Structures are given as structure tokens and as C-alpha cells.
Amino acid sequence: MMLSLNEIRRGKGRFASIIGALSLIVFLVLTLGALSDGLFFGATGAVRSTNATAYAFSPDAKGSLVRSSMTPAEVKEVEEAPGVAKASGVGVLLTSGKGTADEYDLAVFGIDPTGAGVPTTLADGRLPNPGENGVAAVDQSLGVDIGETLTVGTTSVEVVGITRDSAYQLQPTVWTTIDTWRTMRNEVRPEFTGVTDDVNAVAIETETGVTAEQIASETPDLTVLSADATGLAIPGVEQQKSTLNSIIYTTLAVAGLGRV
Image (cartoon, rainbow, N blue to C red; front, side, top):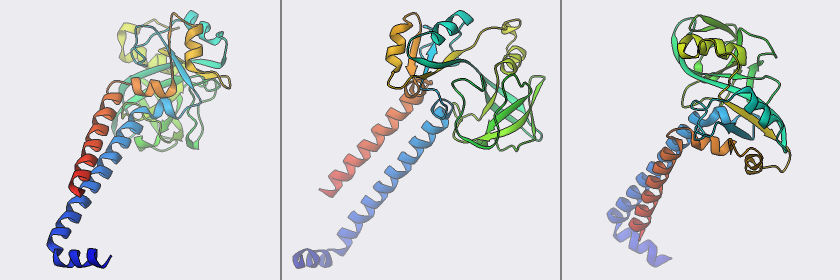
């Protein structure tokens, strides 16, 4: 011990530079870790923070909510699959909207308030009631208050609730009913005009002990992923997470070499 202390006293400058370099590397790792978590949580909150344990998609969607399109018959197929406790259609629209004082980029989610895929992180107010159109709960990152109005196309909704950690692809979410979502979508996406019965995907609440893989085996013509896998299937999420993790591990390896 005394030998080590004497060695440090004789080479204060050398040890100080090593400690400084390692401290900067540790700071860099912590910063990269925080950046990685922030991007991941900001992109996947809308599928992580709900009561859904799995999602079903059309087979060509590659697990992407916005690419998928499902008919009422496909929704019914999922609802009746063994191991499904609850299943509900989900609609997703990436768009822009106007608030009282500003314009926003939004992810509008149409849900069945009594079904699966409903956010569980309500911080204030309430969610829309079944069949209640013209109202919505919004993610707190949007920065609006209960009672304010949001407009997409020519359709306006009153904010009745605030949710936490429910963003999608780094955009704040607007949680409303399927009918209101479909009206908004048909206004801003004219190619869907007149379409009144489709959804993007089916949110699934599985029975205890049942996995997404088991549901997939019962619906071979559809793609079924767990909620975690659905988050990773969002375009860019898995790639950015892998890239940042590689940088972090490389930085740690450099720190270890510096220590040696």
C-alpha cells in the first residue's frame, strides 16, 4: 500500500492525466447510454406503455404499425385465436396538427378504450370513453393542457387526458377512438376516402402464460410480434440501438486498455 502511495506521489502528473482521461471516457459512456435510452423510449413508448402484450400485422408489413392494413375478418381471426384474452383494432396516423397556439407533428392512435392497446400511463384526466368522438388524451411531451383543442385536417378534438412515456417515433401521441382516427386519416390521406372498416394492426392482451409465438402459430396468415419486438420493428429503432451500443462497448474497451 505504501509503495503504491509513494509511486503516485512521484508521478502525480502521469496519474492525474490517466485519471482525467478515464473520467472523460466514463462521462462519454454515460452520455451515450442516456442518448440511447432517450431515443429508444421516445420511439417505442406507444407500444411499451399499453396493456397489449403482442400485436398482429398484415404479413407484408414487417411488423410496422404504419405499413400494416387489416380487414375486419382478420381482426376477428385474431380475436378468436386460442390464448387471446382481449384483442382490438389499432389505427396509426403520422401527421401534423394545430393546437391553440402552435403546430405539431403528431402520431394519432385510434383505439378501443375498453380493449387492448390502451395506454396505462395516464398522468392526468381520462381517456376517451367507448364511442366518444371528438376527444383525446395526449402525451405530455406535446406540451398542451386539458381543455385545449387539437385539429387534424378539419377534425378537432378536445384534450381530456395526459399520458406519460407514450411517444411514437419521437412524436407525441394523440389517443382517440377508431372512428375519430379514421376521420382524420381520410381527410389528410385522400386515398383512404370512403374506407370505413380497416385498421392498421390488432393489439392483443394474451392470457397468462401465452406468448406471441403461440398466437402466431394459431394465425399463420398474419404476423404476430410481442410488444417488445414490435418496438424494435419500428423503422430505425433496432439499428440505432445496435449502433450506439457498439460505440459504448468500444469506448469501454478503450478505457480498459488505457487502464492497463
